[in-house]
Length: 224
Image (cartoon, rainbow, N blue to C red):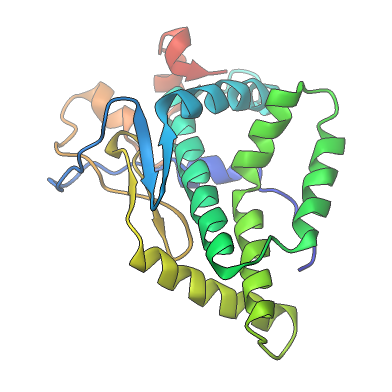
């Protein structure tokens, strides 16, 4: 796989889109659990810790006056960590590790983020590099399957196998994050049990992040 640059802030708006229109069933979660991915559990503390470090990086990339609501950023973090966990378990079951091109991409990211502290660097790699990691695992699986046709064919075969694995395993992300894993990647999810009625609620769940709304939030609820 050709080394892929990790996705930047443009991905945040897409990954953090939250729609509130349904009355879906809400899965039960033990206190402190952010996600269950097959045999793995991701804690809320882990999501909070990574979100804090990732926000510190994001703040260096925002334009003057630009602010993000913290719950949107936490949704991206929770989804990325869940996706990585799924890819890790899929790789173990297939007896492979991620294609070496992922390590090359991660190394380049570390070098480009040299001014950040280690926790911030790791947060950027964990969040923005999640899809790159998944693709590297998919390539390894496709190669292990003996797929002819080169890198693209191997990735396509591995992606199909990963989607089948996801369908066969229980993947649950706390509805508060508004994120699911679909077709081998994270996607916005309609996880609300109510409709937004007031102006504040509507802005909080707009299709695109509302900077005016975010700017009016308390410091603990915003990034930037």
